[in-house]
Length: 309
Image (cartoon, rainbow, N blue to C red):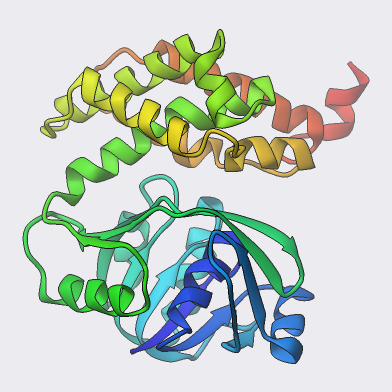
């Protein structure tokens, strides 16, 4: 299968690199990472060891492939969609955080599949990523049910040795993933702790309550996700990735913009839509957004004015 991975950072490079073991893969990312991949190939170490030589580009416009996998930060979804709209693809699959698929659907003609990925990935240096944990990729129809394209994509991932599930219940799985992200990302970023220590410490109370709030939003949206199921999912992921730090924790530590809007914005916007109370998610969101303003990384914020107060 011909696969284009748009957004070849840590996760995109890992997934694309694993696919490149048996498929024709093009990575679209930024220099100097893409330059090093072109020169020396992509090295994957950690839980998986491989060296592959995918095509590596910095311009994702006017390309074509059987499948485009979107792994950008959620706030870059619209830019990814604009680039992909200039190309030709049979299917597009998002492995991003948050509910980004609807934005891809609005901008693109190909079928958009929903997906999740629980592989741990860390960018080490240009040309090298580390797999910090073996997880799974789940793919399926955005609205649920069986889908021949999802089966084809799932088979391609499976052929590359990626643990893959083709699921008919993606609406529920999307909310479960949102509950996990809401439970782990914000609390771990605010506490500057690994996933395991976040859930085991005082921050675990906020983490579990954020997950329960997402579950209540899901049920109001007609999706059967129980409070205990959402909390169990958070606890399971935290245990499986206990030594890892969440992407939001990594972003805050590095002084980068976070995906607060994609994760907590998705939860609170839907809470408003369905008249569901979500005070924990709102509090976490306001604190992370406040940090972004103070760090000068939130679009539209006047960092100089904030710092002078």
